[in-house]
Image (cartoon, rainbow, N blue to C red):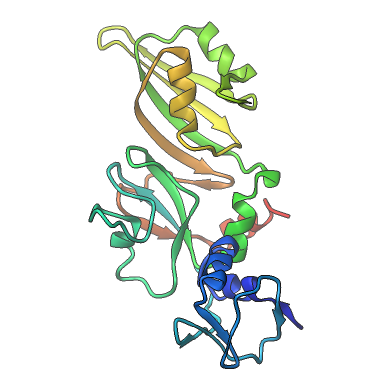
Length: 239
């Protein structure tokens, strides 16, 4: 059966489907010895497909939960020489990459895989994958301010979707508030911007859940392989 070239690359774990499109248009892909830069071309599994001169071979799909520490870039390389997710994957085989992003100062759950097709689906807004964060803000955040997050707040030119928010702790002595928040959007620095809107800047942010996946007691900087049941539940989240 013929498939679009970008889907073949994604299924081989080369990159997400969107990343595969960039690889194709950059002139890095040949099929049966011929350069292909057009998106949408279809080929079957018998085609000789190479990326940067190396033939792609279908990999067994693997899935990991990674507890990203603060101060780590959610990329596979960094021109400034900062620590990246790739530094924690050096002993693992395959074309692994993180699904989505956590910003430099945010820690917690990242999905690591070589399944580009699933990654694309998980990141697509239409699937509304829920993400749970524990947030620590400076100051005593009143309940009526949390209600604004539950309704949605206006950030620049868009209104955030209603969030599920649970107050966890007030510490009057040290002057901070801790709550958890569940959102299905994933805009850049979204939770930090939401808290800035309330006038209570984030001092610590950690993602503890992504869809059916939980961080549980996984230590910072460590990975664990997903169980078959977790993979089944994760794939069941997407269309």
